Image 1 (cartoon, rainbow, N blue to C red):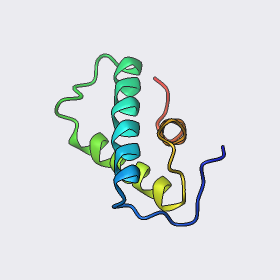
Image 2: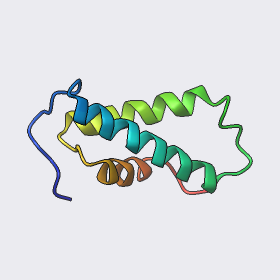
Image 3: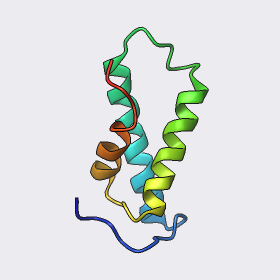
Image 4: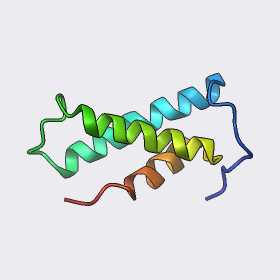
Length: 78
């Protein structure tokens, strides 16, 4: 995966947009994997996903597709 860059500014508008896109896409994928979970009330999962995406961005992953792929590896398939 090739979008790693040294310590991007997390508050850069492009990074924030990538994080938002990655969150939305990952969240949608998680919903399709587990149709029985109450995603509207699962604040713990939302927090876990946000922390994972932020950690990836801090490590230099700034492409929304790559962020999604790496984040999904952290959540077990159902």
